[in-house]
Image: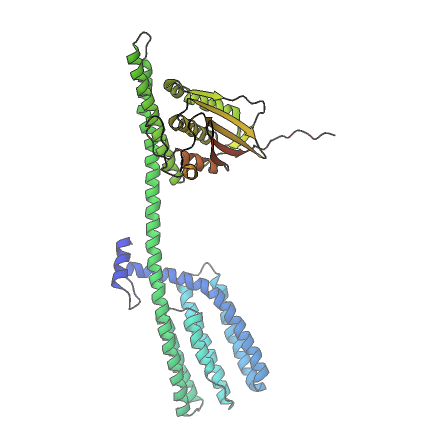
Length: 451
């Protein structure tokens, strides 16, 4: 079964309530399973109704007739309904077989109503035929039988009722009038059953098409994941080789022009590596590939690590990166790799777009959290962008036109949220401050309380 087959069936229609063979088989399997689930509720309701009817018979009918009708309900139809209820939970019985049993139970229920009417006729009690109409409507709408099964079974019940009335000696005119009203109810039920099954079949086609599209999307997502994983490794590998080669092209004694050229090439390689990292981070976020592994992380260690990682970039650009001293140690709950990526993005963002020459890293403890700050001495936040800085594809301008996609701060926000933190930015007279807050790590072995 494929999407083209389903769309063709939707276009051709199914007025006869039949699909192409493959689709028809799948539909009937799904329908049988749905009927089994429906039967559990319907059986409980039917059991309660017949018990109530038996009580009403005892309270309203003559004693001899009530004994017969109550016996039919309690000794015949209630055990059948209880059997259907039990079979609906029996996993060893196939759904298709259960559907047939379910239909036979409807037939048996109708026969019991006919038997009650005939018993009343035999005792010359004017019991109305409305019980048959209720039974027909119950089969068509409450039980939710398929159109063919409900129509054929209901027609059999009407015919049996006609023969039973004639056998009980009812007058032909009265019997024909009753049969007319029963056939009218049967036609209404048939129309309703046809419309219901047609709607169910249409929903079935929609669900099958959605399932196919969902599986196709999952396959596409899996292929994208494999591509991202492979590309992340294969594209970074040549950059590492180029970086090593450029290091070897800077021997002592070379001219300033040569060294400047090598420095520019190294800066371009670093920018390309960060650009690729941004693209891969964004793709991994969109595909749900990132699962943070939170653990206690010392803020000072994280700062020193990112300082070493960006030291060459700052040196080559003539910028300064300071780690502000703190006498208060702080340990946060974070993913070390994600935290390093967040801090690196904030630091490089300050270097690229602040217009200043100094970037500072600092932190402060707050109530249950640690706020880590990346501040600069540049021109401050761009006007009009304060509320959109962390949105995708929003870029500020700096002294140099550094390449980028406007995703760096978006990745900062996403990674921070994954680590159960929050982030933001403030403009100051001396520049701007970008900050992230992450929860303090819980001490594994707290100090004992004083005696």
